View (tube, rainbow over the protein chains, first blue to last red):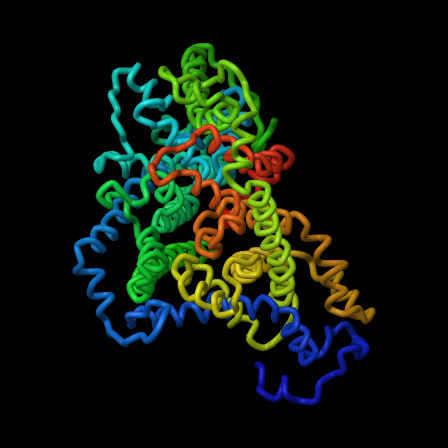
Length: 316
Length: 288
């Protein structure tokens, strides 16, 4: 057990020769070295993560604008978030985005992973690599390409879809279709990434389990349900939580493709934080929204931690 | 080309009855893959298309005639050479600092015995859950108070260390055998020496993974440069390209795709050279 005198006591000189007998150096020495090693990272994290967290909390109870005096307004900003129709709609849009993005990305990525671990498919590695490519393309840059593809007049995808009898109009200007479109772009960007994680998870499943299930006469569907899914549960949880957190932070392609429109139908929380904080200079509102985002992320992360904690105990 | 090779590679079981369905699956996967690559192909081909063809109906994927005019325009419509430099300095700077500071901190957490080790580790893991968007406004205020808005310092310093990198490297350092450094310690080697000549050389794969993650994330980031730069000359390629959309809402697609192609190129080269490492390192993020 550490005592408070341990670090304050007479220090072993930095260059002192190590004691014989294999015991590492005296603890006092290691504390000093540890402080030196940790200092740069700790200073950065304290200044740019810890302090801003507290500062954001304080700002969220004020009407700060970044200039002049700020008044303490209590819970007014939080009350507004849950009563103002515009802001409530922002929370709704973010929830809708998350609810659309997560299952589509998850099921799509899992399906691709299953297909591309099937040994009878030729060129699996080529497909894996190709499907991973969107992950390295900036979402903002990809959003330009998607806007062009979906242009109502000269868009290639619009034209091809018309050829198939699907008369798509200006999807990005349509309050019904703008949201599914920006979600599609996010799915496109991330599906290869989640697929790779699933493939790694699938390869961890012992082949013997499948052999045993086959001997018991289990068909492909049953093997998927009773072997693959339970064995993959930790990977699944990871991807679900990861995808949901990513969805809560949606910004880039929305900023490029719709700017939150039409009629704020794609206005997500981070879009709103950006606009309230850096355009309208309503820092109180922006930081209160930040805390709502933070809380949602925290809850998701804790669910994940709890799940993993439980699993580790089960294994132990 | 190879990405992940399955550890238990087996003989493909030949089942004649299934041949037809196998080809069907192959065809479906091929079409899907081409569709997924479509936006990337559109960037590449449109960048070389003359404006008249870009605005023509019906649209085509391939250019009828190839031109470099769009690349000329991107350098006159935007301070594009400067934007490329900024992207490199920003993403490269963040990566360099984060690797040094994260690995130093990770070494202390993984290999040194000191009071508060566990508490610090828990605090760092907890701060992993904080999205940067949630602290953006106070961070901006801090950067503004330091007089760093619209400077490289303002863009790089707040990201010069990050909880993910520290935690990731700490997990790797913990897994390295301790025999070598205790031997070195008995010989009187300083911790810095053990760190530099024993731990770091054995951690190259983990360091590379972190470097790739950090560089790609920052190179591609939009919100960060949008917030911390105020003049077009200090933006990155990603934030600079958003300026091309004029107030009329008319998008010069050719110029934009030429810029996009240049934005994607360094990462594409990186990816081609190290695709195995790239994909494998991503795969490990999901494994416990």
